[in-house]
Amino acid sequence: MINKYSEICGFPASGKSTYYSKIKIKNIYSLEDFFFYKIFDDKNKLRFFFIYFLFLFCKKRFFYNFFFNRFYLKKKNNNFYFIKILRKKFNKFNKKNKKILIVYKKLIFLSSYSYNRKIRNIYRFKYYLSLFQFFIDEKPDCKIQIVEDEGFYQKLFHLYKDDSTKIFKYVNQYLKLIPKFDGLIIMNTNLKICISRSKKRLKNFNYADNKYIEKVFIKILNLILSKTNQNKKVI
Image 1: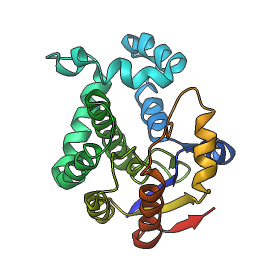
Image 2 (image 1 turned 180 degrees about the vertical axis):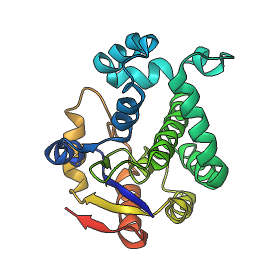
Image 3 (image 1 turned 180 degrees about the horizontal axis):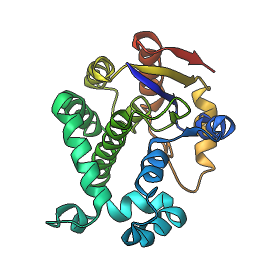
């Protein structure tokens, strides 16, 4: 069991970010915040200053600029120390949990996303697994807590191209594979409200006009509610 780690999950536009902003206090971090605060803690690492300011001012694009850029990912002898750390952490996690990534990929390729977006989602999942392993290895002191709103459970909600039984087969497999941790907060907001909210967004997830989404998302949420072995709180 992973101590001091919790997740918030729910339909996209269910109010996760609003809820998270209310509970996020001084000693509560996201995995990404925790990682970069640790990495940049050594103020003598002058070579990190440029990247540090990019992280502060371009945080939402940081992943795409540095982790999805194939030049940086494939470049030999990469000097970006934090990329080396994350690669190492991903390899460590994946060595013991290979099936999680395999099942996640199967779910992604059942989505209606473009090929490039599917690959981008897989990279982002690897990034998340790296951050998760980094947190486990750091063994932070008792004052540090992680609350993640884009964690294992949230990564089940994609725009699927149909309501195939394969989706629910893989969701069930995935739910059995992910690690047990302290708590799971489930935003049980009416899906029609979430769809209405998403239409007002200029960015982020949008439900579009996917005719399968209501059946698929509601069933996925019900599977999470019924089968997860995490400590649950439904809001």
